[in-house]
Length: 98
Image 1 (spheres, rainbow, N blue to C red):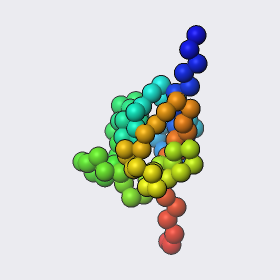
Image 2 (image 1 turned 60 degrees about the vertical axis):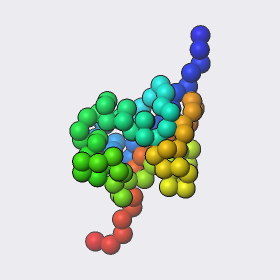
Image 3 (image 1 turned 135 degrees about the horizontal axis):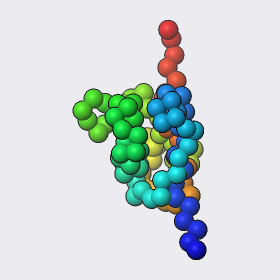
Image 4 (image 1 turned 120 degrees about the horizontal axis):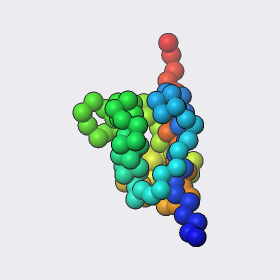
């Protein structure tokens, strides 16, 4: 029996509301872009709208993605490689003011 861990994706705030659960397991994804594609495939248009700027594959500025606690902006962005056992967190950036 294989012990493939897969990738754990944790959702926070509006992303948690969009998927209706705190976390999901994704069997495999080569990089962050592939992982996000899989999430959009699973959860549909609402997820796509929260992740990407309208009509593009560019992440919204209000979206933070961490791989094992490190922001992808400090890594390789959407090209950040993933491996079994990685934990990816997706959450909105905390905006000040109001």
